[in-house]
Image (spheres, rainbow, N blue to C red):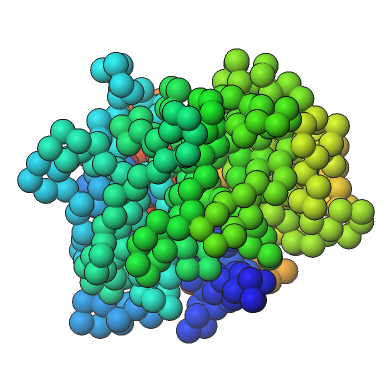
Length: 511
């Protein structure tokens, strides 16, 4: 039954609904591949600055770190619309017509009110905002997740209520924006250590995309300073807590942040995620898993580590803030060769890890299938996959395409683009009509830390990324989007591309 439920879950994300695809989770599917294989409108021929460009923009009240989500054919606002759902750092969620047929939101839900504000951007004891983290406020940072069969969108919001810091999970009706009965629930957690380790609602940073798996919404928490990383589950129907895992129950840190990526899931329902700096002692019988790639099994309300991979120099990496969790993990489709079940993880050192999901290898880089040290400036982003190719964009480098051969990556990129991406690089998305007309989309976001300059949307031929089909600067000012937001990921569905910025969501399509 477990395998059946997970298979059904993946199909909901990947198969067309009403002749269209739904994008209801971060990077399109539970494996986090970033691919939409049902795109029949946008092609490598018509995506160019003559026939493709910005169609409309919708203003929002805060920065859009979360990836926009898309559901076709929603009964909403007295009609039926294809809908794009957008969450902001000002603790808002918007539903917009995805085809630019209206000028205002179909609905708008704010989690603020009398005595309720967003969280300030600063760390405790540090009054200045750090523009490279979150500024000027923290509200909804992570990508929500949608259950289309239940008409629900699940959103994690960070608020300050009468001076008390809160982390809350909201369940909203995608048709009206109304809270579902029992929503919201305050997110709390305790690890039964001595003394007990508890979640610090003020200090955690919730950045990873939410995961919906077999009726449970999972929230991954990042630590800030010495606080702990967590994975916490809530029943999607009752919102009762259903599973708590602390990365470092007897230690410190162990953030799950992954540049905004959501935890990934394999066909048997096991969860994969990476952790950052902090305490590690699992190799000596302990229960602290910082600087690791974890494979976690769900057993009722228990979350149990099945396997892990940790670089042999984890202490060195932690001491220099070289997070394994600076990007997310993607799970490749079954591969030929000796290792049919593989995962790809890139991180701050510039290494690209190809891991065996059937045996992650515990401690030691020699236990990885491959460890390719390619980009000296590092990765703060997640790979994408299409048709035997892995795509990555690191810091101070171009988009790179790695064509797998018998389940192995080449030692150098098969193809590379010409545009160099500044920090933090980019997480690409793929649109394709199965194995044809494949396009790699990416957002250049260096503008956020360069005075608030505009984002740049790029489109590359997925068969050879050296060929750039389009970018949003080619038509003068016509297609320029709003100011860039770090870790922004494009959403592609039904002939449109959606990108979030500091002030709006911009919609691109055929002109």
